[in-house]
Structures are given as C-alpha cells and as structure tokens.
Image 1: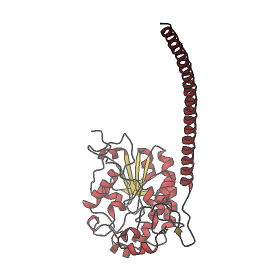
Image 2: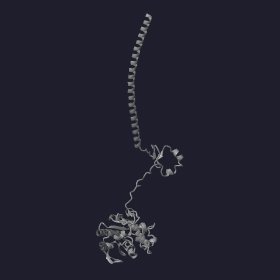
Image 3: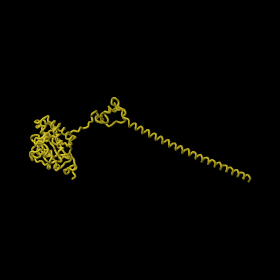
Image 4: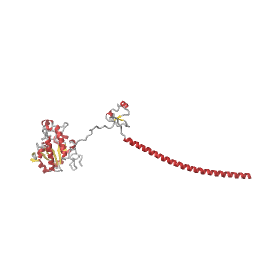
Length: 357
C-alpha cells in the first residue's frame, strides 16, 4: 500500500511537471507566432510598396518612350531614302498602280522607302497659288429666281440692244427702258440727248434722276468698241459714268454692270474690236471697274456665248450682233432673273430656292 502511494505521488508529480512544461511551450509558441505574423505583415507591406514603385517607373518609361517616338521624323539621306520609317505610308500615284508588279524591285530595295513613291505628294515652289480676284470671282452667282415684278422699280440704260426691249415688247414687269441707238458711256457723261422710241429726245441722266429707280441695269460698249484701240477711252468714260450715276441715284440703288455680249464670227470679222479675245480682255477690266465702284457685275457670256466665245447662233439676229426676239431676249431676261443680288425682300418665283411659298 505504501509502495502504491509513493507510485501515485510520483505519477502525480510527473503529470504536474509535464503540465507545466506543456503550458510553457504553448505560451512560447503563441508568442513566436505573433512575432512571426508581425514580420510577415511588414514584409508584405514592403513588397507591395516596391511593386507600386516598379509599376510607376515602368509606366513613366513607356510614356517617355512614346513621346520621343512621336517627335521623331524620318531621316532622309542624300538619295532621298527614308531610313527610319517604321511602317510604309499610304501608296500614291504611280507607286499604287505598279504595286502588283514591284515584288522583285521591293526585294532589291528591302528596308528602304522612297518619299517620291509613298505618302503625300511633295509640293514644288509656286505650286500653290491664291486665285486672283478676276471676273470669274467678281461676277454675280446664280441666286434663285425672281419673278418679273422684281423689275417694277428698275431701269435699263443702254444702246440698241436695250432698245430691243421696247421694239419687241419684252415683258420686264414695268421697268423703265432708257435705250438709245448708237449711245456710249461718253454720251451719258456729257449729257448728250438721245432718242427714246417711246418718249422722243431726252437726256438719260435727267430721266433717271426723276425716276430714282432702286435698280439700274447698264449695257453699253457694242457701239463704242467696233474698232481696235478704243478700250481705254471706253473704260475711262465708263468709270466717270458710274460715279455720276451713283451721285444721281444714291447709295440705295443697286447698279448692275453687264458684260459686253459676244457677237457672231462674221460680225467680228467686220468689226475687229468686237472679236472674242478682245471683248474678253475688256470685260475683265469692266468687272474690276464694277467691283471697285461697288456695283454688281453680270457676266452675260455665261448664257450667251458658245464654247468658242461667240454669240450662240440660235440667240443671234441676222446681223450677228443683236439678239433674236424670242430666243435671244428670252435667254437674257432669264439670266437676269436668276442673277439678282440677294435680298430677303426679293419677289422670288414660287418654288425658287429662297421662295417662302
């Protein structure tokens, strides 16, 4: 019994010692794990920070490299070869048409791209020019179509071509016709009397001053320019006439300067001053003059001239200078209706571009 008691006490002491040993080991391991976890967390945080720095550095390097590449331009050597083009530019011109048959040539010149064959065409000196302000720019463009009432407050000043409106009873919506056979701009400036087929002898400036039209259509020159060398005098008087008319009619009047119309070749042969090439030159100066005086220039050649610069045969009277009553004057009036200076108050033909009906 005593032996058993000693054995029991011994076992109990060993168990207590073992228990104490296990408690110490558990506390040690728990503290070690805590310290180890703290170290791991710090290492992970440091690793994440380093990773962010590396990514930022990589992005910065990529952006700097891209900017440097965008600023670089192909280097061209003395033979015109671009050596640092990364990709070929769009093919153009002859290079495009010969692309299928250029395989062997491309192999021989691999790695070299000629600027003459690829990309935008290089402009030579003087290749780009600003269009001069000539008659084609100055002339009044087509601008809808007005009806005949547009001419009710208009006047027409001219020579025998204008007389034809009265002779053939052309409907111009009640416009005032100041047509005088054989007249030129010098007669208007000098206040020479002309004979109206409806009113008798009169001075054009006095008639216009009394009427005060809101639009004035002028067609002069056919009688004055029958001989060569008359253009300078004609244009000088024309400028004076425009100044006098502006002073007489005021700034509200729209003055239309019409080009000198072409004639048939047979008429030009008899009157060389009316030859097509001569009239083109005079009309060009007339357009510049009208523009400088604030007038509207009407290029009648757009509707009256054929491809060679002669009066269209179907529009000509037998003498080759005047217009036929039907086709000729019809084409003239239609042109005037289609080339009125734009105004919202114009009496537009129903269905025309600017018509509100």
